[in-house]
Image (cartoon, rainbow, N blue to C red; front, side, top):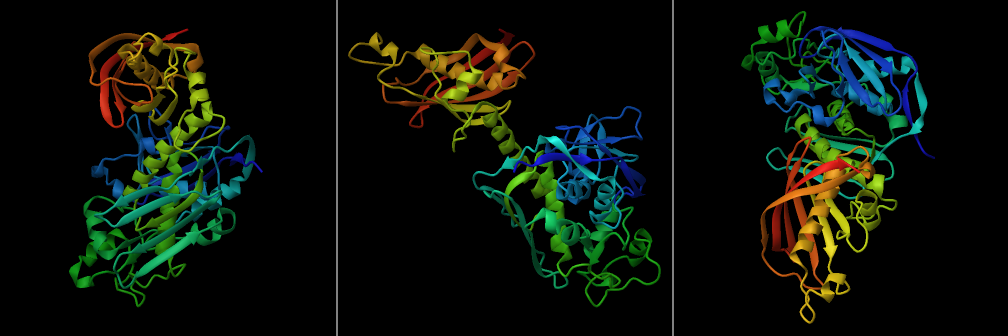
Length: 469
């Protein structure tokens, strides 16, 4: 049964303080139409900007310390620490929302996703008419960081599952793992209540960085990994607003705060990963396995999945039957390019990064018409045909940037630095690799290379214009 998109029935709000900024903040969730996605905006600025919840807008500047949370930015508008909000939305399988904030950071609540879950459930989740658009994992995708010992893998599965393992070499925390196998049955009760955590040695560092201004013992778990004599307890006490003494609990947690689950830190890491991966822009059909994940690694993997998703969307747009290792087959190419026999010289597209590069294939057979005259008894593929095939491959990349490629046509305006390195004979497979060097409203420039069996046979720089048919 095809799943349909969801939004909420009515607006609903929640008020509190931001974890890092310490500002009082109200978050208001509002219904949104189909295919709108999740969009943040701030009501405390003169010119509100809509910031889509997509990995494309995640801040990568470590001076804003993206390692301690996931922050978005568009046109100067910054939204801090969105991962718990997005985890709640992902866990409840909501697709379309406008989220208004009265400050730069959502209220932290109790440090989990539960406050947002409660607000969204109170607002009422309603089904819409449009079908959900999934990212379907069709092959193994892997992220590895040797230095940090981080691995995240996505595997094919016609459902969604996520498993997380953490090990920080700390006796109070130990090695922990957890797994979510059903969003419907497990998310609200088993994962949404899991609170954020940090180590005692990190608290002073975070204070010095101007962070955790809204941090309290009732919205974060502080795991003791050093003796109190080694820290400035006065500053910690003042920042965290602790009444009474600061002490290491019997459970290894500051002031003996009780855990909601034995493996609550691992569950919270899963919660963070769920929220960060929601920035891909679509719910995932696949199994996610993660060892020692963190926000930085989550975002890097989300970028990888986002590119995979965009390529998948392009393939679905033009290709009726998906094929492994093929972005566009011959039929899909004909839906993009206006060329037809005997002047269509691209058989399939095998790699594609929108606005960046493309790789196309041309199988050269002895039946090509041009071999009849070029040359009888010694057939060689004409160099101009090689360049034409290269240009057609580039044209596919350019036309895919257009909303209605069927209404456009690519006119090639010039060629520079054309070189033919080796002849191409019948039976060869030409591989064209093109990179977009520059794109302006009136013209584009690409660098192209043609290979046979890994050897360069031709290269050129191509200039083109995209015009209405």
